[in-house]
Amino acid sequence: MDNNTLSKEQLYRLINFIEKRGFHAPLVIVEILDHFACKVEEKMNSNPKLSLDEAMENAYADFGVPGFSPVVKAFEAGVNTKYRAIYGNERRKVFSNLPYTLFALIAAFSYYLGYNWCAVNGYRHIFGFNDSSAILYLSTLATTVFFLLRFKHMRKNNQIINEIINYDGWVFYLIIGVSCQPYSPANPHGLMFLSIAGTIVVFYYTICLFTRYATMKKGYSDSSIYYDYLKTIQG
Amino acid sequence: MYGYEMTRVVREMTKNKTDISESALYPALHKLLEDGSLETTSEIVDGRLRKYYHLSNKGKKESVQKINALKVALDSLQHILNSNLANG
Image (cartoon, rainbow over all chains, first blue to last red; front, side):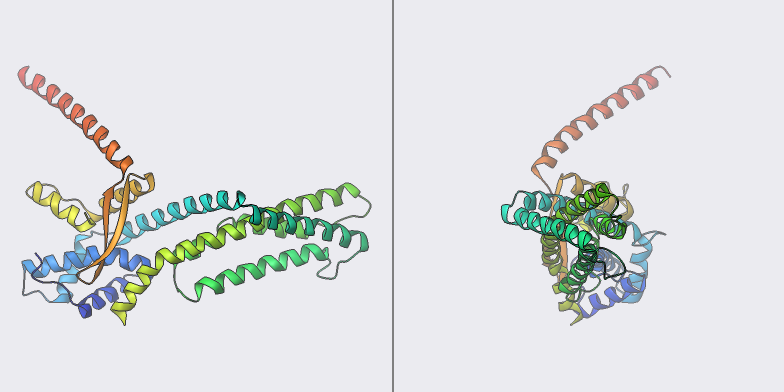
């Protein structure tokens, strides 16, 4: 069986073959590569006259009509489930970590004071929103950009990182919602409701940021092995 | 055991009568990984990054239970087939 082991150059051609079938993400390529390479070797060993191209086509035909898709879908579903579980665990850790929780509480309380102060003093300089809300909204955009720059520029096309960055994305939309609510000075209950709602959102969003950062670090570390491996093949 | 090895071993053990397709194997493996019944380790073999699947402690316990359940089901089936054959 092992009398014909594919060389680095041949593996590089296999990677190109996989990419031509529409799978460009490094994690997916590595997931497929070993199984596909074993099949190609099997074809070449059973018929030494086969060229690499023919062996690749024959091996690919063995995957059936859907090709690599079922393997990829199963892999992506597995990744999604795994990192959602990690995210949940990390969130529990952040909640039970005093410095993180304290930081989130301070951020939330600062927002509460800022919101009320801006509402009472009529500070609405950005699109007519309460300035405190507008700053919060811009901060969420800034943190998202930070995450993208911190992780994505180093590992392109990393679906683990791309997925994690969207976790708890509904909090982001909630922030936009709270920021856009008009406040009427004639209704003090409205001020109370909006400031408390915003404070809760800020607290949870801060917890989410710490959680997301920890999960992304884990995802980045887990996926490094795939990228480093591909680098050795692709040069 | 790695993915390709599983398909090969099944083929050899059944003398080419049973062939596990990739589209059946990998979704099943990932389901078992999600359940925590399987664990993986990766290492570079023959210049390839190979993923080895092995049973976790939970998987070992469950596999014993499931194999026993399968044996009971096969015995029942055998019993039905035998009694049908005996009755013509």
